Length: 297
Image 1: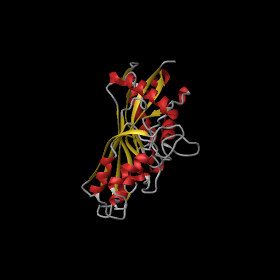
Image 2: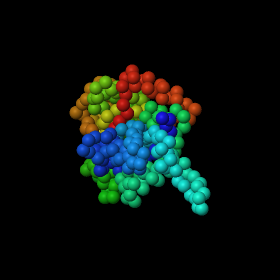
Image 3: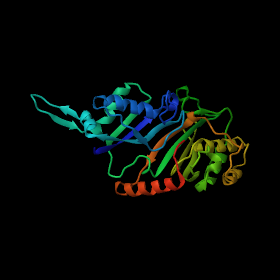
Image 4: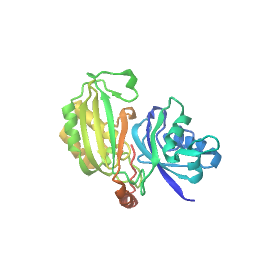
């Protein structure tokens, strides 16, 4: 049966989720989203599955996560918004565009998972394999920053002052195409070679340190380990010019810690122009088959 691919742009507070991936007996983002889809399409008997740009770990948040779902004609018919009178029937919104509204309705007026947009995807689109890059932020309130209790689940509170210049020096030294095994939790068959395209630090108006990191993909725990190395330098425990050497040693080290998930948010996923989607998917799949890369943090 032919299907229509629908792109979903979503956000979630990771505090109440055991990560993205569906797990028996645990509440996960994928499980919650697919549960809403199953409820919505109960009359058709369909139980659609979703494919995501990058699986986030336990407690990690997202503002700009992207996923896709393939729907058949019966499911799209369920989604049609209809206006009519005296026997007239006028479709005012096709299924793909109304899916976000229907999913949010099932989630209720106050939910930790919100679908911002839904739309029929362009030809060749794949949320995971078409992605060019993923962008994350990590927030740290050190001793001199304002500690906002409303953001305690989204910001790491650090007891000491941190040297932002030393942290920026570390960030700049790590850019480029490298093997980041020293910063990744090992996964059998998965590559740890990544291109870190951007990494920088700034303080916001409350003095909170905000890291911005962008890469073609991140391996498991990579962002939190990179930020942990910066904190070690910011505390004066690790010389900034040593960190690149630790990376190039390609071995796990006790010189820095992997930080808690609460400060980490997936902010945005980037894709090529529509005309280039199919080519991007083909290249990414070929690399995956060669190295079994799996973007996750």
